Image (cartoon, rainbow, N blue to C red; front, top):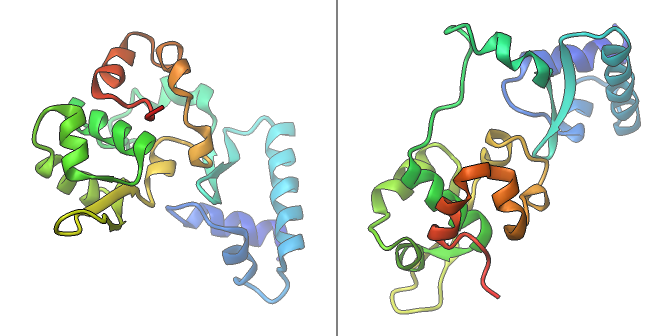
Length: 188
């Protein structure tokens, strides 16, 4: 088996992005440089052959993904796995957490103006947020930040790929008011 075949097989079999160090541990012939070379060769091969797949970088790993231009065709099939739709309340809360992390429940509720306990539990269950520590205030409240699946769910490589607050109206079209109302912009 070639390094490309091993890496490609691992990426196809995995439901989550795999880091280079994880890929390099799969076989004694794979070191970090070999994995990087295999990923680059696969990426070029897929592009040259105009395959339906691409090697995508999500979070801190790599995954085989269908090309974005296939989305209209894939959406027609119910059997295609889709992301769970998030409620407006969950999206608002997630936006505030992403831009202001770490943030406590009380601060989140002050920004949103409503109780967020149920939404927080849902976002934790979906692994979109996680407890990142404890605050210094009375009772040492839990602090929340984005979780392990946040980057993957939104197709981001890192939090640096989040749109800047001033770019939100353009990025979201008419939906930007939701984030503006929710106070998603980071404090000055």
